[in-house]
Image (cartoon, rainbow, N blue to C red; front, side, top):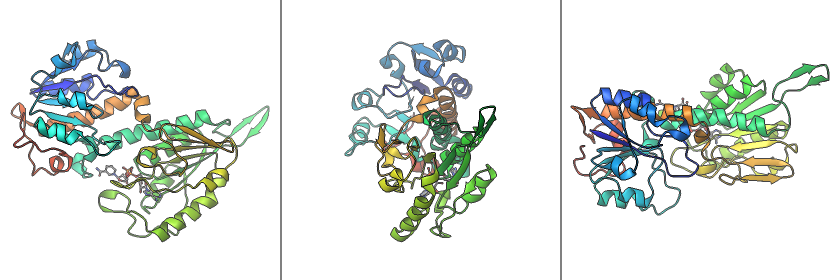
Amino acid sequence: LRIAVLVETPPDEHRVAVVPESVARLIAAGAEVRVQRGAGAAARFPDTAYEAAGATVHDGAAEVLDGAGVVARVRRPSEVEARALPEGSILVCLMQARAQPDPLPTILAERRISALALERVPRITRAQAMDVLSSQSTVAGYKAALVGAAELDRFLPMLTTAAGAIAPARVFVIGAGVAGLQAIATARRLGAVVSAFDVRAAAAEQVQSLGATFVASQAIAPDAEAAGGYAAEQSGDEQERTRRTLADHIPNMDLVITTAQIPGKPAPSLITRDMVISMKPGSVIIDLAAESGGNCEMTKPDQTVEEVGVRVMGPTNLAATVPFHASQMFSRNVATLLLHLMSDGGIELDPDDEIVAAMLVNPAAGAAA
Ligand code: NAI
């Protein structure tokens, strides 16, 4: 089985899908790994490290793709790149389309390519180590707290100095899932006074165990947790009560980090323009749900919007700004998935496998590589 690792082409993408440590694991399991020259450079994994791990490094994408059974990427290929993938191969990457209609499934079907969409790893215990959404949310939540700290014109910690006492900043995290919990932990380490809100009642204990306060809302129904630990969508009335809770709490906050998502649906719109302008000038909102519509009605993806001195930021790819560790985690997820699929030196995509069934975008007939 030949696995191809390519240079990521989107300009804001600094991660790489497979790092040298995983190359060694895949080779030990019987695979051959070809890496495009410079694929790991932006994430600080030099070509020499890939060679030392047993991969071969090649100049052009065509050479890397020649005879490949599996093509591993972080981001989805462009249309041109998809047409260059070997016929009958298996593509493993994040497949989310920004625009609809999405031409990629048709191109892949024409070329009998089976795509495994990494954002669809099922939320079951045995797939946890393959879950790139969780690993990359960890990175994004951490970085959101750091970006927020850097953007504020005040300290996060309480300080007692010869120049007098400084009050700590107040940080509010909305959505206490993987990203939110990491943002809470990071803001706490920086000394902020942190509070958090989630519609899942189970999140309260996790928030409190990190030393933050859980903001309670009457909106929390016993069924706010859906299958797999995800949140269920709120009814109109519940959403209204959530908004009232947030409207009371937000005016006193210096930094708000939002991470609320409902799988497969647009992000819940929770922060209105009125709430934004109720904040003190200099306050910052970082909306990690920007790509799926935003938790704040003023959010614009990858832009900063300013209103009465309050800045609303909508970064969509914070994980790529911590490329070394984000790639290491992503790559461990991908390698665990590939090792799960590999047998006798090849790969069979068994549609009866719960993990394959959930991830398969384009089941090429009898896919095997
Ligand atoms: P997510 O990215 O889908 O959502 C982020 C958070 O937003 C969730 O905590 C959700 O409850 C919250 N949220 C949704 N609507 C909201 C609203 N209107 N107001 C406030 N908050 C709202 O979720 P994520 O971070 O991927 O994980 C959610 C849960 O699933 C966690 O308990 C996590 O531990 C669990 N999980 C389990 C996995 C497994 O078993 N393999 C893998 C990943 C997560």
